[in-house]
Structures are given as C-alpha cells and as structure tokens.
Length: 235
Ligand code: ADP
Ligand code: MG
Image (cartoon, rainbow, N blue to C red; front, side, top):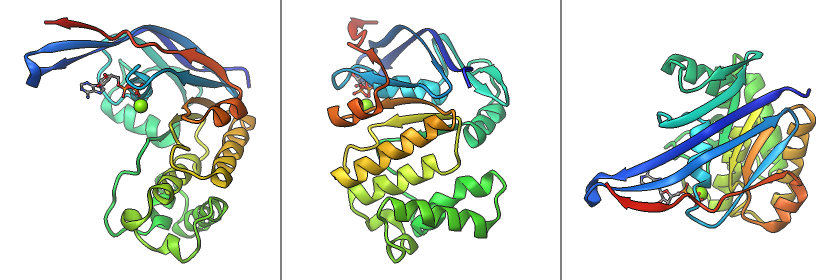
C-alpha cells in the first residue's frame, strides 16, 4: 500500500515556437516528486505555470526532453522515457487514468459506450462494461435517457461528467486529473470528491489540478506550488 507509484526526477520541458521565430519557452525546470499509493499531489499555481504540461508528461504525451518519469506498472517502476510506444499504450490501458479538461469528441457514440470502452479494452464483456458505466453515470447525475445519446450535444458540465466517468471507472492505480470539476455544480463536485477518496482508499495515486479551493481543501493532498520556469529566451 505504501509503494511509490509515480517518481519524477529533474523534469524539464521547453517549447520551441517554430511559427514565432523559434522563440523558446522554458515551462518546467527541475521538477521532482514522488507519489505513493493512496496519496494525492495537488498541482497549484497560476494559469500558464505548466500544470497541464506536467500532467501530460506523466501520461507520456510527448517525448521527455530532460529528466525522468517512472510509473508503477504491472508491479514494477517503468521508465516512461525508455518505454516503446506499444508499452505506453499498455500503460495507459491498464494503469493510468487521465481526465483531461475537456472530453475528446467522439461523434455518434452514446455516452454509455464512451464510458464503457476502457473497461471493454481491459477485457470486460460489453454487458458488464455497460452496466458498470450506467451505474457510475447515474451517480454523476447523467440520466439513463441522456446516457444513450452521443455527448457531442451535451452541456460542458455533462460532457465533463462523462469524461470523469471514463477516467475513473476502470479503477486505474494512477489518476491524472486536469481541473475535473471546473464546470461542475456543487452537488457534482461532491460526487467527484467522493470518487477521488474511494480511489485513494483503494490505493490509487492521484495527481490533480483543482480550480476550486473548496475541492483542493477537500482532497487535502500534498501541494506542489508551481510558479512556472517561464524564462523566455530567443533561440
Ligand atoms: P497551466 O496548465 O498551468 O495553465 P500549461 O501547462 O497549459 O499551463 O502551459 C504552460 C505554458 O506552456 C503556457 O505558457 C503555454 O502557452 C505553453 N504551452 C503549453 N502547451 C504548449 C504547446 N503545445 N506549444 C507551445 N507552448 C505551449
Ligand atoms: Mg492547465
């Protein structure tokens, strides 16, 4: 239960803006932390501080430039930088739940199937996956009628709740949450806080960005203050 689930060492990231004269923007510098099973690390800091960029680094969304990231996968710490693309897909399927700020649009697929898909990929039957998806969507106040419709016409808050259900349902041991409650009302924020607590009680390690101070207080995690390396320099 006390295992290190995420280890980050000396992580750095610089964006080069090729369409703006090759100006480079250092966004992350020397980021280091560990998150153990059941713990939550809260990324704090102003807009532009590099919070989302850090979460994307943990999801191996781009090649790491500087530093190292390890994720516990199938019982051992796996070096993400050295992992083959096939391994990264496996890690995402089995180990990391990533709730991005917005739902990636999937035309015509009913919300129920959007949420059930990761469970199906983990090997659940369609019937079981759909039943579990429906239970979680109802808990997030998506009605049975609505969950049969494609989320493309849903409100921002409804889409975000579908996104949350999709990220939480498979019971991943690592959860990356990018402002999951930003467009939710108080009742649904409370549901999400409950989901985070349950995941941690089951041993999940969470790294989260939370817009609302109320949610930040409720999850009571360790806080990483990010001011942004943001030293601009012409390349
Ligand atoms: P936060 O989530 O803390 O608001 P981000 O990680 O989204 O911050 O962004 C940090 C900085 O990196 C911002 O200045 C942003 O403009 C820049 N940035 C983020 N993604 C890219 C990208 N793909 N290309 C260039 N610059 C980027
Ligand atoms: Mg962000």
